[in-house]
Image (cartoon, rainbow, N blue to C red):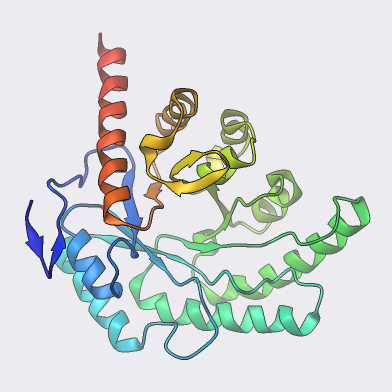
Length: 277
């Protein structure tokens, strides 16, 4: 195994190997964005830049890092998508918190604009006490109003991709589509919360730009893919066969990424051999 900067390298390139772009996160190695991209860029089609936190000093990369990330994209022929901060919510009941969320997201979107990201992944939590119709309607109104404020911040609104969380996608799906945005189907989240993967993809796959893929076991997610049951793996493969966007292996360590790539490659190969038999 090759070593670089003291970190183990992947053993082969997966660039252009699948009908979709294969991607992973910028937190594979315990280091900053630049070292992660340097290590991963030669092997994958895209990197998911994780910007989970918005509060505190130095939580977002400075402009100089964005400039270098742009150079690395050209060097390695990769693209980026950006996971926007998760510690804020445009659906918050508190109007000041809503405004803070909109301002923060606007700042991050502006910061990463030079990278021409394929997607901006956005969490919109549902923190109401129940799915009572009136509570849902009020939440949807807040979300719709604030998404309208965010749309002008990007040249192409469809790059804003709303990620599936713990609540039914039907609560927000029509809002997303009416605004011309897209969906990030987190297959791990859907499996953890026992939603019907195939039915949701049937309903929303045409408007999905990014899939998040990771292992799930005993209610835990973001594990290596080899932790998936055979039944879950089979459902995932059925989705992947019909998808040509970005598939991000959303794991956070080298060991989990390596195991996931091996599992993914073997299962995908098995699927191709079965179809060609």
